[in-house]
Amino acid sequence: MRQWLRLMVLGVVLTGMTAVAEAADQQTAGAAARPDRSQECAAVTISSSKNGETFLIFGTGQTGKVEDLPAALSKDGYGRVAVSSWAPKADHETTLVNLLEAGIDVEMYYVLQSGKPDWERAEIAGFEAVEPKGAQPAPVYVKKLIEANDYNRRHKLPGKFRKVRYITIHNTAEPFSARQERDRVDFRRDGVHVSFHYAVDEQEIVQILPLDTHGWHAGDGARGPGNSESIGIEICRSQCRDDVDWLYRRSEANAVLLAASLLKHYGLTVNDLKMHYDWIGKFCPHRILEEKRWDDFRKRVAAALEKDENLIPIQE
Image (cartoon, rainbow, N blue to C red):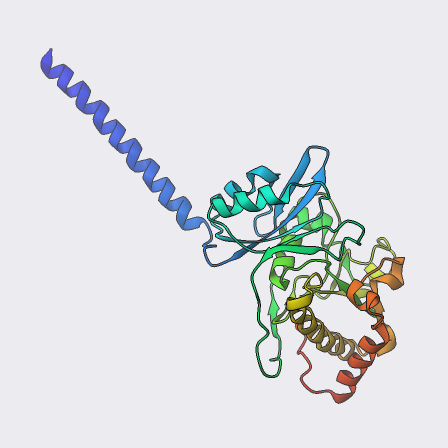
């Protein structure tokens, strides 16, 4: 009887050890499969909904209630975050404190300002970014297309171009980088048809759609020329002002080079350069419009095209 009992206990112990080992193996495999985001800065927007304030993490597509944001970032492996809020009644002070208490460094945090348009927000927390000295280096061209999965084909990759006849300029109305804006397009799952071909920041030109495919960026429908016949360029960092205004200015300078390069690539002229405003009257690109610089922007593109130096080789 005692021998049988000892064998039974030993069997339970061995089974438990095996289960623990299998669980450890699964955890190790999961950790190995999870991307290393320890050096990345998460881009997050906060919005209002019928269920209160919610967040979207660009790089994972994860959404949830704003009070759960610190835990969600930690679970995804992020140690830094940039936040942009479109929620007028959100308790941002509490959210900021919760992020810092969770050990999440806040690189920037932008909120709406009473009585001002939503593209002119205030930064309540952030780092000091000092403009590098010397001439602006040439931008790096990065081809990082969004995934051609079923959802993206339905909402972001509508079909082939009939013909490319225009280049359309936008501002993101956000402080985020080009790669972060690319991730927002790739991972968002809110049923909205939104996509564009390029996001441009102070360092990189990121191509996110194939150039034989039109996007959803002009707001003029499936048959409108803005969507169906134009390449969409989003100039990033347009929320960056004051001490970090240089981030936007450099992003715009890189967009000038890209626009000129695309005009040359497609055999177009500066007359084929359009604003989002031209298609549906939306106040976009807002930085260029509010500063009344569209004519100046076109002249800069025309000069780059005529000079034909430092233009970007376009990758189909």
